[in-house]
Amino acid sequence: MINIKENEKLSVMNHSCAHLMAQAVKHLYPEAKFWVGPVIEEGFYYDIDLGDISLNEEDLAKIEKEMKKIAKDGKRIYREEISREEALKRFRDDPYKVDLINRMSDDTIISCYTQGDFTDLCRGPHVESVKELKYFKLLKVSGAYWKNDAKNHMLQRIYGICFDTEEKLTNHLQELEEAKMRDHRKLGKDLGIFMTSDLVGKGLPIYLPNGYIIWEELENYIKGKEKKLGYKHVLTPPLGNVELYKTSGHWDHYKDNMFPKMEVEGEEFVLRPMNCPHHMMVYANAIHSYKDLPIRIGEVARDCRFEASGALKGIERVRTFCQNDAHIFVTPEQIEDQFKEVVNLILDVYKEMNITNYRFELSLRDPLDKVKYYPDDEMWNKAEDKLRQVLKDIGIEYVEKIGEAAFYGPKLDVQVKPAVGNEYTLSTCQLDFCLPKKFDLTYVDKDGSKKTPVVLHRAVFGSIDRFMAYYLEETKGALPFWLSPVQVDIIPVNNEYHLEYTNKIKELLLENDYRVNLDDREEKLGYRLRESVVNKNPIIVILGQKEVDNHNISYRTLGSEETITLSQEEFLDYLHNLKINHK
Image 1 (spheres, rainbow, N blue to C red):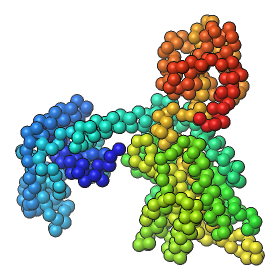
Image 2 (image 1 turned 90 degrees about the horizontal axis):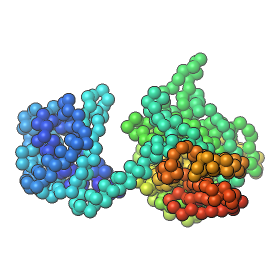
Image 3 (image 1 turned 180 degrees about the vertical axis):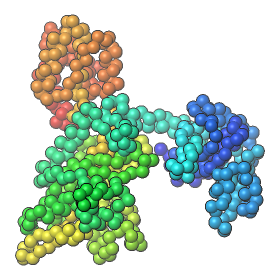
Image 4 (image 1 turned 180 degrees about the horizontal axis):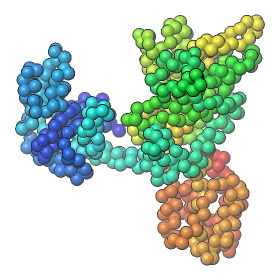
């Protein structure tokens, strides 16, 4: 989708359209008062106080109609600079504008824009005439606290978007509809994958049976690949003593993202936001020789972070999640080979999962930020130079991002571009010279001296939760065979004549470890077929008299109306190939 804020022409048009909308609202609701109406990536919004009036979809249509009427009239838009006293006088009946004016610094240039019978406080710029605003759409209305403070009263926020051509607007609206169909929150509900409950808590999703099947398959998949590479998996507790995080440095650098500490029997505990400190303690539990390294410690671990309620989104952004986490303890000489192994693992997973739209970012510290980052210039310079050299040697193309590193070291982030929405980080690998020193970790080197290992922090899926959200949207919920909660949906044409054979086929598939559903409801065949498609089952088996007589199996694949008939042995071979090829 187009980022409106980054397109100068569209940004001006959308800012102007926010004023056009406000003018139309003022015509229809003369008592309306206005807070702010900024341009955002997806268009614009305006926060409005309408008293006891609550807007709905029909009201948005009325406002749009009035906007078109005003635009057709074609009034020019005039800018005017006024004094603070004049501004307070002109907007004396609008407490929201008065609040804005009173919070402006003394040297602020106060300007207004007027179009016909409507004047608004604004810095601008704007288009020359409302006649230029032809192709717009009001998208939705929601509640928004004044100044984003829950202690204040609720305003109504109207969202809209404006383009310079009808074609762009039409395409954008089609993309929005596509986004709605792909939204993992809708798919999660429709397919019975996860649920949320305010009684349980915001940002605390519950995975339903279908969702937990997907979860287990992903966990088994990534653990299987890790085991082949020599990872040893552990299980560590989802909380820890506050002293653990003070030792690691997370308490100083990450405390605001943690849940509040709990005091129990004189000890202070906190829900863990990451697994690094626990894995440092796993390493410290034994004496290590250089011959033991690399040591790869893996875990699919439950973590908790305090996310603002406004940032929560389905299972993509939550307050509790499971990281596909691992820490690789290496000698300095092993950094390049082990980093390369991690990158190759990421690329291998992406290839098998058919993820193609991604890029690499090298996240570095901001050397001017003396608060966020661990204060050791020599360590940072060494780590960043080493990582640049490794990436050069591997041949990975990347862009550098200043100020995006973890507090203890630089990292390589893999940014994916989902089918809808903005890109975000899915996989990461971090280079860390810091935490091993903080925990006094050592290994015995060839000469018998004690050396400090280097740690690679890596997460291939990132979190299983976020990966599920991403993959649901990429596939529109039509998951590959190996991940589908129901792999084979069996439908008998007529229960009276075909159910006995259908049950035999069901048992055959269950014995071969396939996930099967038998739809023997007393509904028409067409209805059951349509519902199986809606549920996005990859294989639909249809068993009628011909199949009973010949001991065959007829099936369709999702998205196809072609019916294929195979012997039972051939069908089992077909399913086996689907499973092992991850298709």
